[in-house]
Amino acid sequence: MCIDDKGRLFAEIAKQKQKKNLTNTVFYFNRYIGLKPNWDIYNLEKNYIPNLIEIENVKDENSIYFKFLYKNENLFLSPESILCSYINKIKQVIKQKTEIFSITFAIPDYFTIHEIESLSNTIKIGDIVESCNFIRESSAITLYYGLNKKDTMLDKDQVVLFVDIGHSKCSLTISQFSKNGLFVRECLSERFCGTRDIDLLLLKFIAEIIYNKHKIDIFNNKKTLIEVNEFVIKARKALSSAKTADLIIDYLTDDISFDYSLTREQFEKIASPVFEKLNNLIFNAFSYLNNSSKYKIYHIYLYIFLYY
Image 1: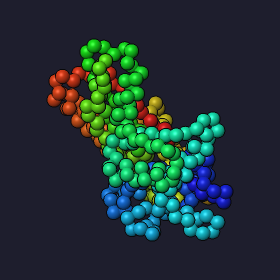
Image 2: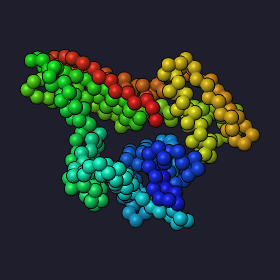
Image 3: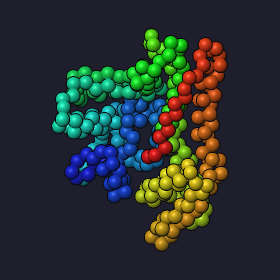
Image 4: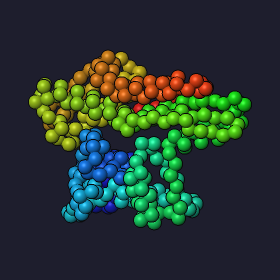
């Protein structure tokens, strides 16, 4: 979300304006919902790019607020208030065709009770809908699969492993299906294991090369940092099929350009900490299956979101 003189903008429109509105743009505010400033999770979350807006503790030391500049005045918004605005924006679009009486949120399995309560209170205070429900992502994916496969269910139980690799997290769900019902048997999640973790490692690698070559610290220049980050994302996508990816930045500064050829071998080495996290999750999932002799995998479904 970003704020300009016209008000609050969301999604792709906000992203298009980020370069000209860096200090008034916040990305992935939902990752901050329910967090406390003194939590380790909060400090880890602040490391990611491109969230460069100032985060301050105002009004309440136990709350998080994003600092915006609106009509030459400071405006402090919590992640929860931004979420209310976002949902209301969606409501306005949907209500053009139908009424909304209830919303069901699919929440990550790693969500704490505090994070769930914070989300629930946000919906109630915002008076967004008459009814609000929550379902864990592991339950949602199990229910969706069961409803779509119910006609092909065998008399014998089926065990399915769902692997979901996304932008910021990874989760593995082991579910059991039969004609008599469906069950989530195990769910493993890693809160910080996604493509943005790979992007951050690549960005730091490229930033070091730029500094060694040109003595420019891109982390001290928000606009340059955002631009380099975009090239890093393009390189990461290219290396999913190519052996090399060229990063060519014509104007790193007004009079300096930058180019670098990144190989897949370098990429895999740089991103190895993320791959190791994923490998550990998969290892733990199969360890659970091996220790439960009655569970034999029928299908493995892999959901990968590599784009940003």
